[in-house]
Image (cartoon, rainbow, N blue to C red; front, side, top):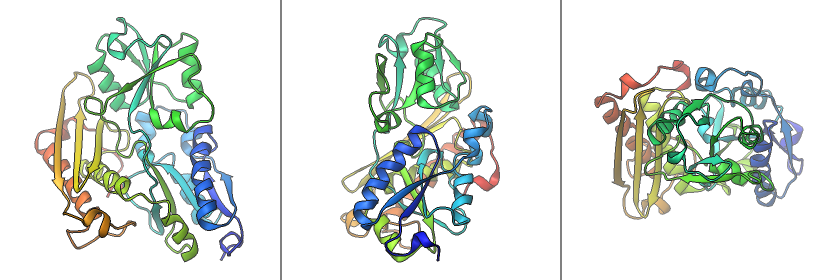
Length: 342
C-alpha cells in the first residue's frame, strides 16, 4: 500500500493543469476533506489533450484528456482523479471504477459575445468559435449565416478572442464558466442555450471521480458520500446512447437526460455534419415506483435485476441508440477507435 492510502496520510487527487481542471478538482477536494477527515492534495498531470494542438474533431475520440491521468493513477502516482464526464470514453478501463458522480451543474451551453447579441441574430459572416462537431452542427441550424471557426485552448484564451474582436462569439459549457473563480466573462455577455433545442454532450455539467478498484474501503466510503444518484442515473442513460451509437466523444450527437420523480426522460439527437439534417428522439420511461431512491446503485456494477435504476437507465440509453440507428443515424456518424467504447 502506498503511503498516501494509509489512514491519516494526505489523499492525492490527480488533475490536469488547466485552471478549469484545477477548479473542478478543488471543489471535489474540499468536499472529500470533510467526508474523509484527511487532507487532500492536488497532483498535476499532463494529458495528451493539453499538449496535442490538433483539432478535437481529429483527436477527441481517443480519451485524450483521460488516458495520461489514468496511467498515472495505475502507476501509483495519485489515489483518485476528477474528470469532466463529457470527456470520458464510455469504456471502463480494467482496474478502475467511477466511485462518485457529484450533483450535476448547469448542463447547458452558452454563446458568449461582446454585445449580448443572440446567436440566431448574429450578422451574416459572423465568426463563432468552437472545436466541437456537435456545436458546429447546432450553430449551423441556429445561425445559418455565421461561420464556425475551429478553436482550441483554455476558457480564458477563448474568451480573449471574443474580447479582442478576433471572433464574434464562442460556444462554451455553462458549468465550466460557473466553476472558475472570479468573473471569467468580465464585460462579455453570455446567452444560455436551452436544452430542448440545443441538447448537449452526454455527461456535460457532471464530474466523474475515478479511483482504483482495489482502493482502500476507507477511501471508497468517503467518495460514496459525494455520489448523487439522480445525476448518476441520468448520465448513465446519456453515455449508453453514445456507446450504443459506437461513436466517439466528439461525434456530432447530443444526449441529455433528467430524472423527474420516478421517470427518466432522455432527449438524443444525431446531426449531419453540414446540411442541418438531424435525427432525434425524446423518450420517457418509468423506472419503477420507489426504486430510484430506495434501491439505487452507487457504483459501476451491472445489475441483473431490471428494477435497479442504473441498469434500467443503461438499457434505455441503448434502446434509444438502436432506434436512432434504425432511423439512419449511422450514416451521419464517424466511426471511432473500437477500444473507446463498450
